[in-house]
Image 1 (tube, rainbow, N blue to C red):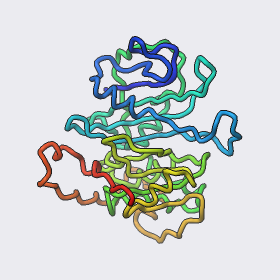
Image 2 (cartoon, rainbow, N blue to C red; image 1 turned 90 degrees about the horizontal axis):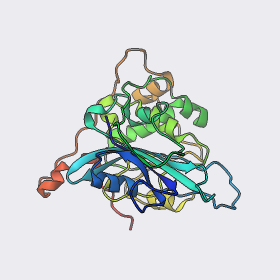
Image 3 (cartoon, one colour; image 1 turned 180 degrees about the horizontal axis):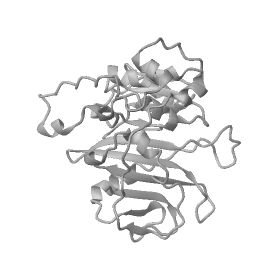
Image 4 (cartoon, one colour; image 1 turned 135 degrees about the vertical axis):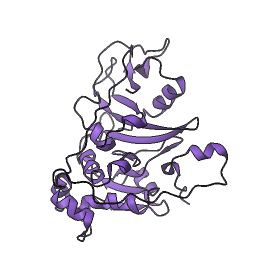
Length: 303
């Protein structure tokens, strides 16, 4: 059972005196620091202006972030995207966040959970209110089928292995995935994540429409719109790996993960890859720092 919060534009928010973009619902009993953290993660950047011609759909930001909150590792699943115009007729957004406890992390991983029907809401037309019952997190695992989304987009299902291989080689590294609006980024990331062992999947953080990183959060797989400012900034990070979906990709040779992506996992078969080696502990850090998960190592700022 998990806490959740919904943030959008409303005539009246949940807390007295709030209106406009504000919280309209959250689980009763949620600690105030968690409410503040999720509100701060509710930003959305439209690609197109109100009167600007659109060359594609506005992307939805499906996210899995990990944040260190008061020395505690917090796992956050989010869906942030455009929604129907608000009560004034202006452009609107809706952010839905769910805090997932370690004991409730499904074997399928964060993308698999986010893809389950009804897990996230994409519209809100109710008065602001508390959510009286904690949210149930679905359990289960991915099917391990062939990476059809990667095959459809690139012509080779084996391309799905590039993200998984990058994480296994460097769990704290950043991968920039350059895309254009209309590409199904959540399915692509889900097929790549399915190649990893279940115990590793929840360590991988991602955003299907990355526009910036909130304080204290981590994001390994960053999907950025081509030619955007954040895409150029991310490409300059030290050691970043770039997968540009707007151009032909290098051929992927045969290998365990590439073959698995191309053929799918036989029913009942277990993942064939080993988990990445844990990063060495930084014993010189203060005591509070020892609570940080290895994925909370931040990349250096670009020069």
